[in-house]
View (tube, rainbow, N blue to C red):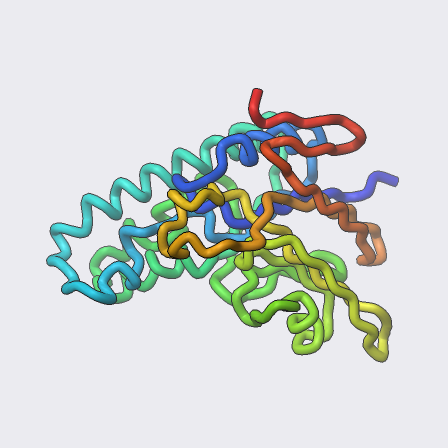
Length: 256
């Protein structure tokens, strides 16, 4: 009996991605040949649509903003093309795109300027239907078997995986926090687990000026999930260190 396998990837923040880490994921996709691909969101940085940039200065006219938004759309699509090329090679048909809070910035930009909806809403800007992705709105949970997937922004704290379990009462996998973390909690109907699977973004100080050189605990990673017919599943979390990881006993080097 062939079991279904999924590869799950967290925050890439194109064009502020870590190129070797993303390349390692692409090589893993081509090796594993999963049945399912799940993008957990914050696929793009979307700085052009961020409300934060106008916190201390006046928002300019729309005609000034549009060229910057168009450029972000081009760059995020270019990043998605890299991954989709490997998905096509591996013949992965079941693809899911989960909206992240950064994608929601673009949706909010359209809400402020509703006449832009035909082109600038996330599903249209990223041509998700054309790419073969099912779109899941921010905060919505995608459930496959007994495991739930979403972006990861509902609950925070140092032990955010535990906080998710105490509040949700079910198995969950997410990104958003950029760190690798797992917790398990016993409920009346058995043990439930939560996984935070890191990120795939450039973690340097230069690419994250908003941190003000504050140190963080971010790590590059992705997950491989194998689903059984009864809904149970097995998770293998792959950490990527300096662009290198190990999948199915094979060293994958994203630097070459």
